Image (cartoon, rainbow, N blue to C red):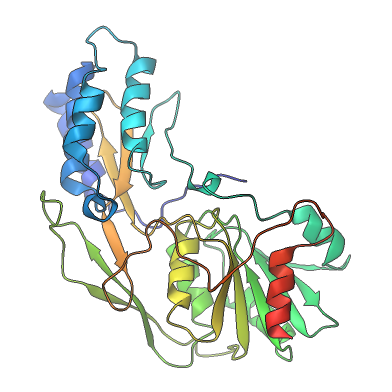
Length: 333
């Protein structure tokens, strides 16, 4: 599976303020100074300690014992990167000029996507490419298949108008978000606005506001507004897997509030906390989740992955079939 870990949103003041401080008086290459700084920043600002039942003090004790004042940069990076990896969150990274730490949520489940199988057995030789979308008719033009591999920020009215006009007479659409690692949040709303008929609250969001692990802002509704133009009213099957992360998970979460959109496949990779970060005294940078996305009842977060409505997995013994597409077709036809 591809690993694409892109931020949905950057909240700038953390990074800009810290750079200014370190340039003046706080720069340091001391291993323990950098370790303590990273641990404290995460302790005060990471958003999912309570949900994940993480004992951050215990983790500090575990990794502080590995810090030595004479250790190499590579060894220090390994210790601090492993500490962040214990958060099991792919919006959490340590970045140096020689390495980047990550968890790898897409490897928690089996691989459920193969582009070659789809091109060889489902798409025609004349499939279309419209901006970031690959699309074609399936099932004797009864269904439209739309592959969206990354939230690149290039979704626009032109490509969406063309696609939805082309498939306006179909019984349903298949929107394939498998192995979509995320990207621009603007694409999420541009796409969803084509599948709603009235303003709809799809989830709630809150941001860390203080050092306590439970210090958050009030829950704010996240809304999708109907596009003033071409929209699609029939059923949409949204294909997901463990590689569906960040903006892909936000889209998946939103479908839970939209009755005409159904999730098929495996649980997503999560990534529902928007990331932010800053700079360490030694110049390395870091990021981690600083918000929470909540369900409509405000009683649950799918940070560990949005579950499918219909669970289906690949059978890799038969490379002529995509079982997830086949199940979506069965539901539509």
